[in-house]
Image (cartoon, rainbow, N blue to C red; front, side):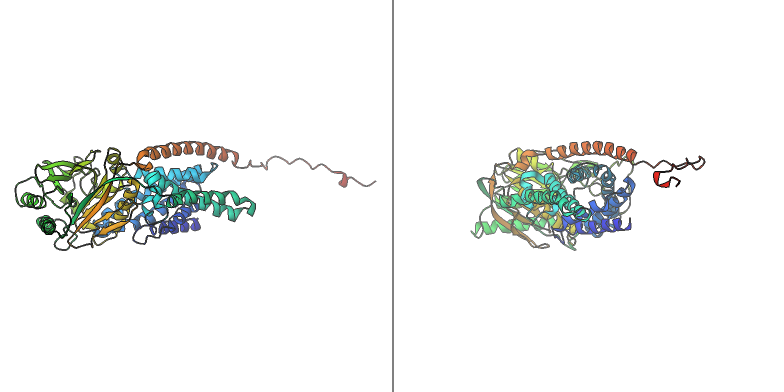
Length: 525
C-alpha cells in the first residue's frame, strides 16, 4: 500500500507540473497513468484513499495562488472539496477495472467527474480540467473538433492507455503487449491528428479593436485601494488614444474594450466615474465596452460589461454568469451571514447573469465573458452558436497579480479562441491583456502592471467549429457511458467476489476417511 500511495503522490505532482507555471505538457499522461497504477487491484476503500491523496497533492498545489491572494483558509477549503472528487473517482476504479477496455470507461468516468465538479457545489470550480493544460502542445488543436470536454477525455484516455501498456509489459509475455501498444498508439494518433489537419474557420470580415489596460494604483493587488484612480487611468488612456487617432498615429478602432472592474461603483450614477466614461466615449467617437459593478437592489449587485455608445449612451449589457462563491457572494446568506475576515467585505451578493446572446458592438455581434466565466462551457459556445463573430474577455486579475493564476487563466483563454475558431481580445486591469488569433497565437500583449493600449485588426467569422456544434452533447454522452460502466462494473465486481469467496473450512471434529491403498501399496505375497 505504501508503494501505491507513493504513486498517488507522484501522479499529483506530475499532473500539476503540466499546467502553468511549469507547463510541461507531456507530463500530463504520466500523471494520469500514475493515478491508474496507484488505484489498481485495491479494494474500494483503499482505491478511494489513493485517489484522495492524488487529489490532495494535485489540487493543493495547482491553486497555490489562492493561498497568497485570497487567503489560506479559502485555499484549504476549496482544495479539500475539489480533492474529494478524485477520491470519489477512486472508489469507482475497482468496479470499472472489471470491464473489458477499462481505460476507455475510466476515461469517460474521469471526464464526468470533471464535469460535475466544474459546476457543483454552487457554481463549481473548473480549474484543473485536463484540457486546460493542452495549450502549446500538439493536442491543443483538437479542442476545435471535440471541445474542452472531449479533449479532457482524450487526454485521460491517453494516460490510462499508457498505464494499461505498462501493466501488460510487466505482467505478460511480449505476445500480449501488441494490443495495448496498438491502443496507446491509436489514442495518441487521434489526439495529435488535428495538429496535422487543424480546423480553419473562414473569415468573412474584419474589425479594428482597441484594448485598454489602465493599471491599478498603489500596491497593484487591491482594486479597491484607489478605485476612482482605476477608472481615471482607463479614461486617461482612452483619451490619449483618441488624440493619437486624430493625429494619424494609430488607426481608428471600431470599438474600445475596457476590463472588468474598470469601474468599481455603479457607472450610471452621476459623479466623476460617469463623467469620466462620457468624456472617454466622446473623445473616441466609437463605442466603449466598460466593466462595472452595477446596483441591482439594496442587497444585490451585477458584474457587467456595458456597451457605451457615443450617441445613444449605455445600451447592451452582459452580466457575469458565474460569480465566485465566498468571493463575490455568500451562499445561503439567510442561514449564515459571516461578519469576519475577507467575508465581511461582501456586503451585497452578486447576481448571476443568464444572457446567451452576443452583444451588439458597432454593428458586430460579440461574445463576452467576464473573468472566471472563460473557464465554463456555458458562456462562449451558446453566444457563438447565436451568431457571435468575435470573442472578448473582461477580467480583473489584480488580486492575483503576484501569482501564477494569471498565466493559468490566460492559457484557458487561448484555448477558448481555438475552440470557437474566433479572434479573441482580453482586457485586464493590470494582468494579461492581449489579442489572440483563432489558432491560439498571442498576436499582441501588454506587460503586467503597466498602462497600455493595444490596437489590432482582427478577423470576423460566422463559421462554427465542430466543437461549438457539439455543444453540451459530449458531456451528456460521457455521463451516460459512466453510469453504464458503473452498473456493469458493479455487477462484475459482485460476481467476482462471490466466485472468489472464502475457501470452505475443514472441520477437524470429523474423522478423515482412511486412505485407500493403491496397487503399489498392495501387500507382497
